[in-house]
Image (spheres, helix red, strand yellow):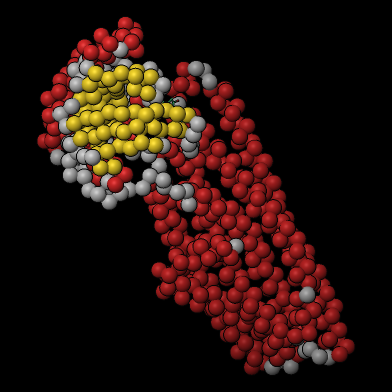
Length: 567
Ligand SMILES: Nc1ncnc2c1ncn2[C@@H]1O[C@H](COP(=O)(O)OP(=O)(O)OP(=O)(O)O)[C@@H](O)[C@H]1O
Ligand SMILES: [Mg+2]
């Protein structure tokens, strides 16, 4: 728990004013509560024992003042501590997403999106609870305990010592249960993210679930995970709820013991006045509530500590692909030298060599799983090569600023992401919207004729999954998006596969026209797509087995002949 606070302490620096007010509030609560307990003594002794009528009118004023102080203090401390907690959590969410989007593609491919969502929402909200409400309770109660202890000790140090001996006895079972809670919490949060993952899996693949009549199958899978989550959660709740009664019983025993011992002091030895004894007893019973709160927030804190560990796992995940410093002016030439890429044990690219200059179009063809998309991943620096290198203008790609590089290299792949926004925003995607240019690239991508017919033209809102577009239309929007960026290198990875022949020919014509200013890589299964390429690289099991233009390959390359005869 101390570790946890150490981690979040630096955040508090920005809230000095609010923190001061909160602490002032806590002190006010503590002093006022102590005053309430203390006032029992004069009320009993002066009013009831000594029967002082004047005091009957004076003392209630103090009692009201004490409660007023307690109220004001409680408001100040709760409001400002909650403010700080909520704000820290807000900042953390931003930070976490910033880190996650900066992580390598590899990380994202290996994690369920649902799990990441769960970490940002569920785990952080657990911490939110811890900072915003548990910490508030914890510290408020701690201050109150200090104040009340002062009264207890002031009224009778001997009795205080006696009752305080009992507390460590109560703490022992609590530490054991707390540890259990922490472990269970981590498990429960893991299970919760599994639940979220399977939900996002179902919703993302809804068409398939329906088409394959897999509703029952998916429901069963979900129900099982859901039930597991319930069981873990209930186990945890049981442990959490056990803490409070243990505390109460121990508290009651200590009060009973105090009544016996204290009663003797009043009745037999006369060391205490009746008022003093009742003030002591009030303070002691007032102590029970904040002590219970402390134990409660402590156990809840274990949940936050577990959540924090899961968040740290992500925040400390290293970014392997680091940016260089060199700025890219224009890319005139790109060269792959003995390029190899391995995903775990899988060797996807083996000793690949090629070179491309501005104005050239390179076709990549070959078997499925041949390594074409992997080469594309390397060209985009989604991965760094296991060995070998990619040279840009004869300099290693790693020396360049990675964001700058991606400004100059655009890809259109099979997976097309349509944003829930207008056509124009989808084309400009993150860039300033230049309407003329948007229309121009839409024309080049051979889709403007269709967009024109939409009710609001380029201001028509597309839905998120792009379901108000056909597969081919989506591809053309994606091509327009790439062209809008004026890239130096344009990579089309199966980007025209969903197009009819006419649209494809028209887009290929556009690309031919732009070719002068570009290096184009085209990955295609349809050989007609690459027939005008200056060079075609034929991939087989991660290797380039032949390269040359269409005519040369048809004559001399066995693998290409095979592909050709099949197409
Ligand atoms: N992220 C990954 N992790 C592990 N293995 C991968 C990963 N991506 C691809 N592979 C493997 O690497 C090999 C090459 O895949 P790649 O996607 O480059 O093929 P491809 O030539 O683009 O195939 P296709 O024509 O079907 O798109 C395949 O065997 C594939 O299973
Ligand atoms: Mg591929």
